[in-house]
Amino acid sequence: MVDLVQIAAVPPGNRHGPGSLSCIKGKKSSKKSRARRGKQARKRRNKRKKNNRTPPTILPPERVDIGLGAKAALKAEEGNIEYKLKLVNPTQYRFEHLATQLKWRLQEGRGEAVYQIGVEDNGLLVGLTETDMKGSLRTLKRMAEKVGADITLLREREVDYGLDRNTRKIAEVLVRKVPDDQQFLDLRVAVLGNVDSGKSTLLGVLTQGELDNGRGRARLNLFRHLHEIQTGRTSSISFEILGFNSKGEVVNYSESRTAEDICECSSKMITFIDLAGHQKYLKTTVFGLTSYCPDFAMLVVSANTGIAGTTREHLGLAMALKVPIFIVVSKVDLCSHGTVERTVRQLERVFKQPGCNKVPMVVLNPDDAVTAAQQFAQSACITPIFTLSSVSGESLDLLKVFLNILPPLSNSKEQEDLMQQLTEFQVDEIYSVPDVGTVVGGTLYSGVCREGERLVVGPTEDGRFLRLKVDSIQRNRSACRVLKAGQAATLALGNFDRSLLRKGMVMVSPKMNPTICCQFEAAIVLLFHAKTFRRGSQVTVHVGNVRQTATVERLHGKDELRTGERAVVRFHFIKHPEYLRLTAKLLFREGVTKGIGHVTRLLPHNQYLNHDQNLQDY
Image (cartoon, rainbow, N blue to C red):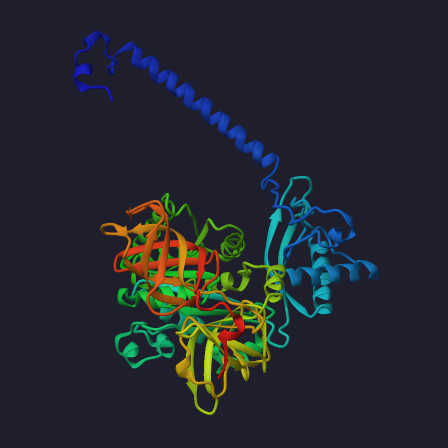
């Protein structure tokens, strides 16, 4: 910056004052340069109008695995996205081939597929005339009917190459299978956010189909305890379901349906896990994130308070556990447009920080919602942001469109691999139901579980497993005969003694030889500690559905740890042995102390060497 004292020291004759010759020349040259720049800008605009108003773009190519031989050719294409340039009047042989291909795509997407009409195999957007587009959609509808599915037009886009006057379009179509014997697609969404941010109210509006009255009426059906109704604050974990049928229409309790009716009419089910927002219920929130294995997390932020309270902590927990997260800014009816914009900008700044490295995407229209759903599942960096109101219903439909299109993270091949393994069911909840007996709730991690199957449950406090029988199975409060890997359900165990069960146990196949341990090692990162983390420290460890206090036995290569440092640490459970898996994600806390990591080594309990001696009949 030029100093004003230096300008004042220049002789008057040399200054570019209003009457100086150099100033007049400068004005003339500046006028000429402005005119020249304006002429060039007009030329560029005319050139763009003359050539292409909408330049052709290229979509990413279909996922292909290159292999050799006939078997590799059969398994060449993966994923549930298919590009088709034209589907007009195919021959019978061609139609049968197309129907088989659609069936494969539906299997890859676990009942869902997306067809891009007017797009070449390499992803080039060519577009179709209106007549060809109608013919292609009719053919796609016939294909869907043949394989037992329905189609929904998600969006159409115009592609103008300037070659002719005919407008060409491309269409994006969702193909979804009609529900058959409860084989619907089930996605679990954990709901996070600070206390009083509107989490339970939003879920009540989505699942009940009625807007809130501004005083929390919509959330009353979600509460499980009297003190929750009195305070308006969630203290326990509750589950709510939202269904979508094969045509993409919402299925909820608005028409006095029962949970069983919703399951029967839905091709896709969203199970919301409503978690607590208050700081004193943090251990319940952590247990819900680690135990119930959510596919996605929805962070609810109040527009009038912004990022406050436990919002940052919940965001950090979801990112530490690598759960994809999207944002809902609620209560926009209480704020001005400027306040909402300020909250959105605050969120964007947080997500762009080096610790997050996220790309925020504000959803403003249905086209944005479709794009956000597809990119969100493909890239872990994309973070959609919705601004809505549970009272006025503003932008609530955009969130429903997003949830309807949101694809699963795992494909059919990954689920089949898990189903081939031995049965392993995580016990997360325990109930006593009149006329039914003991009931356990949880998630089937691997294998297949059927009615009447005999399993073993443990470890008990002395490290043993007890034999039992599964009498019946229910998914989303409706009867189910077969439970597959990745699905959550409740299992009735008849007259099995409830006092022998606890949260954190597993029910496994008798053929499995589970490794139980009192000591294990983990590679950790200390996120925060007020002083130093050293041998003898006690923390609460969360590994899957296991939650128990453990003592630090040893720090490999170090005497102590400070905030941000890494080490391999040996932990020792203080109560009883637990069943753990190698590479399982670990989260520990104690007061303000927090850390994350993964299990690297199991030290089996030396008392249990003979597998047959560990099994006991109940």
